[in-house]
Amino acid sequence: MILEIITHSGSSLEFEVDSYDAPSLNEQLNNNEINTVCIGNRIFSKIDIKYIGPK
Image (tube, rainbow, N blue to C red):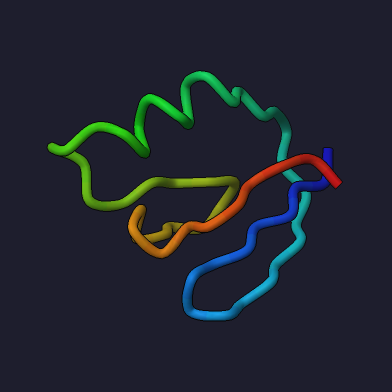
């Protein structure tokens, strides 16, 4: 599956991932004890993520 990620810093990225679990990712992004999230083979600061979704 190809995901599109748009960041608050202005980047627009597309890359392929094996799976996409939106509820799990949403839980990670809303957890105040977590600072970064791993999506595919990349690590993002959770506060920089503006949009994540399938392409």
